[in-house]
Every structure is written in structure tokens, then in C-alpha cells.
Length: 179
Image (cartoon, rainbow, N blue to C red; front, side, top):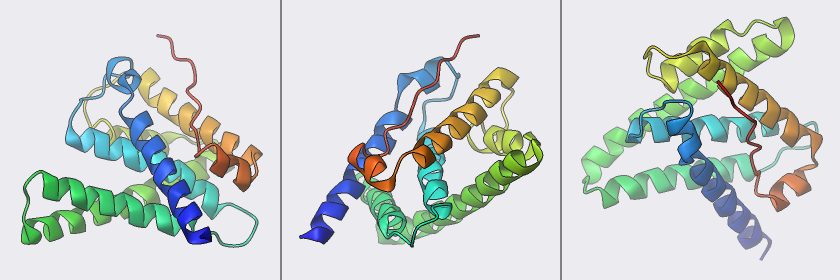
């Protein structure tokens, strides 16, 4: 019974990540391309914030991170199959997704750590530019928004107890953006 409750939390957390990643705000206001790659990167971006929270949680280890990872990649695989990819193609694409996921998490983590410790945003800016904007020319304000958004949400989750974050399904805060 306890496992089902946690699994239900993970499903709701993931649904929340997908919902916020599909928000028109990112595509209209921040000029993101509305395609599979960008949606994938926004899902990873939002998942990173939750994984970073758990990485820095001072309490004991939580299985939520692993369950979220498993649920997320199961959904990616199911989506590929629904798009008509066969077993061999799905396996190849999943390897690419997992490699991309770990690479992005490492870069976001390193970038946010440097920013928190030294106040240097350059790695985080480069990571967001390369991953979310695919190196396209973009306004610095858009990149700055993503950095502030990440920082605000990490702080928001850290301010709350785990039980509160789970109760709210890790609801992200949208910060105001004007240009």
C-alpha cells in the first residue's frame, strides 16, 4: 500500500513536470522551438531541479528520485513505441536519451554549484544555451530568466519539507518575466 502511494506521487510529480514543460509561456515568451527535442530538454530541466533538491536533502536517502527517473524513462520509451519505433530503434534512442540526461544533469549541477559558490553564471548560461536553445542566438534575458527560474524553484523546494513538496507534487513557481 505504501509503495502505491509513493508511486502515485511520482506519477503526479512527473505529470506536473510534463505540464509545466508544455506551458506556452516557454515557447511564446522565451522563444523556444516547439519540437520534441525542446520538450525533452524542458522535462530534463525541470526534473533536474527536483533531483538537485533530493541530492542536497540533508535527511536520509529517498527513493523518490529513482522512482521518478524510472517513471520518466518508462514514459519516454512508451512514447517512442506509440510513435511507431520498433524494439531496436527504441533501444538505440533510449541509450541516447539516458546519455543526454546524465550529461545535462552533470552540467546543470556543476553550473548551479559554481553559481552558488562563486557567483559565476557562465557555465549555467552555456549549458542552458546549448541544451534548451540548441546554440541558437537568443536574448541574454531569456537565459537569465532560466537561471533565475532554476534558482527560485530550488530555493522554493528547499524551504519546504519533503512532505510538503510531495503533497504539492513539486509544483513549480513561475516567476514574472517582462522584456
